[in-house]
Image (cartoon, rainbow, N blue to C red; front, side):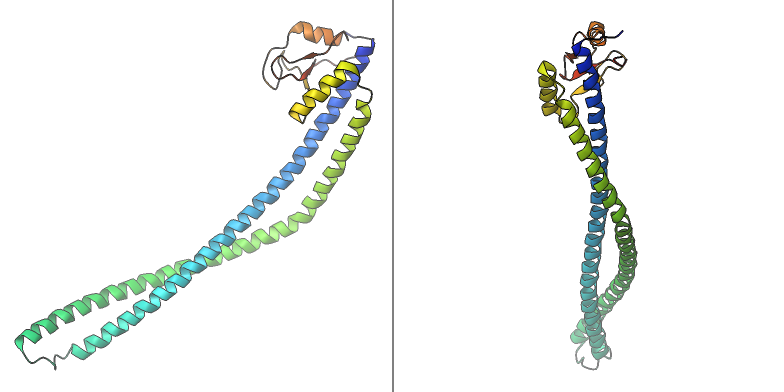
Length: 242
């Protein structure tokens, strides 16, 4: 089917404009994808930096705790050395008290020695984690630095391409007149990307609502252009207007 009237020419123009809209959507989508990838890379770098800061803080806290434990252990050992001979004991009661204190000090010493040993192991683990994070951070920064020039270049190229599509569309829109232009402007203002949709399997691909067959026929004949009853987009048939 085909139409030769003025509306048919308007419909063919609308198809060309929609092709530009599709190209613009793709172009903008690719620019947004570049933004997303850069943001992801930077977010990962920030997360690694925060992890490094956390590991450094944990190491510092652990070092201070270890130093205090070592001081406590030295104090315990010194006290054990002083009272271990029981030379100061003069009564049976003092002897029993000294023995209890020696037992308590030895238990405290064992706990401190075990805690210090665990602290050393923890410190070693933190050091390994910190080294791995530092290497990963260096790799992420280097990778981002290497990729950024290409991304920036492609981003700028896409920006120029989008501008060209917009300029070409503005010129073509001058030829779209009357209610069709008004409908196009209204729908584009609402959806921001495309005002036109192409019927797929007798349905609007955006909202899956059935498009009456007569609407498609009317468009093919160049009699009228219909809008989707649900989303309001201008509906074009799959078959091109000849």
